[in-house]
Amino acid sequence: MKTLSYRIMLKKEPEGGYTVIVPSLPGCVTYGDTVEEAIRMAKVAIELYVESLKEHGEEIPTDEETLEYTLMVETYV
Image (cartoon, rainbow, N blue to C red; front, side, top):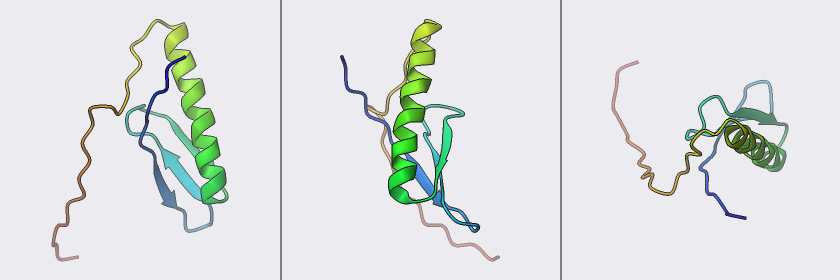
């Protein structure tokens, strides 16, 4: 068994809870009422996504060679 690494992004929703996206896995989105639940749900979503890729013989992307930066931009809103 191989351990894969994925970056997840949690967005706090105005109505409550957190939406989670996995940038390296297009369309892999889930939700949790708390940060902890959102992270658990992300793990399940990633496992199911990767399993589907395996079943279809598709390449399994990872975040191993991904660099992340946060850019600050000034704008007039």
